Length: 161
Ligand SMILES: [Zn+2]
Image 1 (cartoon, rainbow, N blue to C red):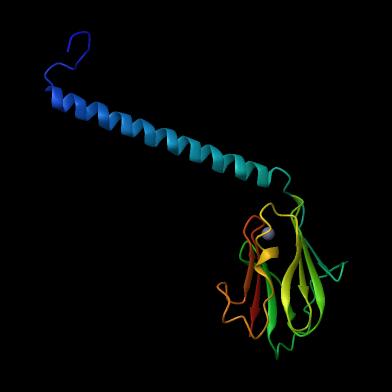
Image 2: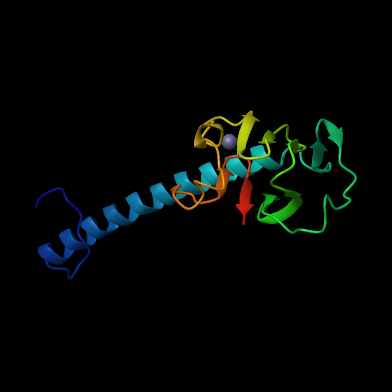
């Protein structure tokens, strides 16, 4: 091929294969860079305002960390953040639990006495709010079982029998 530079000693097919492989490599690299950039931006956005404490409100008042109804003889509602337990409450006692994160993320879990649901969340997708109620009658039938999860806020609520 005139005008096209080729490494000496390489056959045309080898050269084509190399350039195809090289292009594929470049594409992969570009994709990886895009992905890494997206992850970095997301993490930076999440962590930019961190440094303060996560606040848990029980019925609108700051919870002091004391166990609530520690006898644990009935079903419980466990709220976790990043997989770590924040608070463990009895399922049968009506309450509202609000999880307020330093970055402004907020989730309000309603416990009615016979159901649990995400009453409010300021997450983008509102998936958690749309997951509906968990009752003792439906927790084995739901796709998510006894769980209500807010992925953007890394908050999960579990009804444990
Ligand atoms: Zn959510």
